[in-house]
Image (cartoon, rainbow, N blue to C red; front, side, top):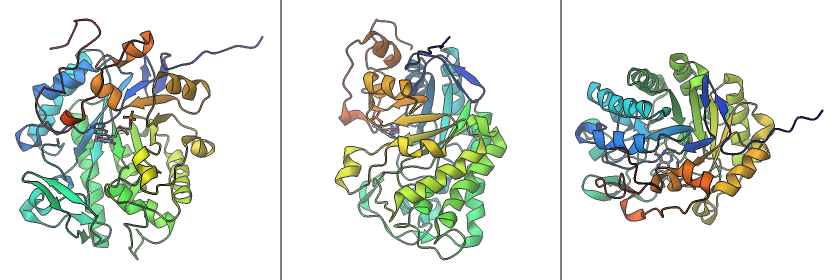
Length: 368
Ligand SMILES: Cc1cc2nc3c(=O)[nH]c(=O)nc-3n(C[C@H](O)[C@H](O)[C@H](O)COP(=O)(O)O)c2cc1C
């Protein structure tokens, strides 16, 4: 007899050690609402707890060290106060029945001396300034040329990720996601537009992928590989990154990550902005033959597209960014095909509860 299995966004799924009640993931989203000292607050805890019906929440990207800071009011995971602040968040999400991973982040050259310890230059694989402006506490300021890391310093940056991973464990998270996307330090090492090194971290694809794999190794040593995810954006042009052969680069990286037994690989597909800026859209399905683990697809999904990706086996889970930002009860709304709140772009980054914890639920039941 042929057994027909029906899977859609609302079916259970195993992710690492966890049985998740649905395949709807809240994508990581920076909201610039951390408190003084880059410390998460009760307001942040309310925001995440409101969204605890996601199969999995991935937090906004979070600095692993003072050197990793690149924006105002973004949270860190490198001080006792920040660990205590995140504990408010993890407790609130767990009390609401959810699961939450912390996204580990180092901005590399996407920073500014005013955000760095002692006003130092940001560090990067190579001394190449991004085009555009840094976001600082005194408004936009042109990016500076970063300082290229010495070979002997790179192990220290990898250690920052290890410490961040350990601190995330102390803060009560269920796992961590390594931010390898969007032109931050890992992506800066990966892509040959930002990596002109001549040591073992530059040149060949194998060398440029080394930093990513070494970070993954140390983070897995803290958490066990099955509670570690990684996000990559193979078509990304955001933060002025580009590569001469992204298909070959990311195919190599993904095949190498396949050997770790990770909790998941999170892939963002090309956004309209990537396509406008000359990014080469690489569909997630191109990487399927290279990756046998759990895969989360991201980028412009709605219910119909999400169900189709899961039913066809292209993805195991789907993550939603803007839709989750604006709809705290997104899984329920998708299940009922109910109308969706529209995201207000004016309140994405910075501010207070407006546009953060005040998006309405379908019914009047909100988590305070
Ligand atoms: C306000 C906002 C902040 C974001 N911040 C992050 C972030 O901190 N880390 C990250 O990996 N992606 C970040 N993203 C990208 C989202 O995780 C996601 O990849 C993107 O929104 C595409 O998914 P969507 O079409 O479902 O919104 C952000 C997106 C938005 C809208």
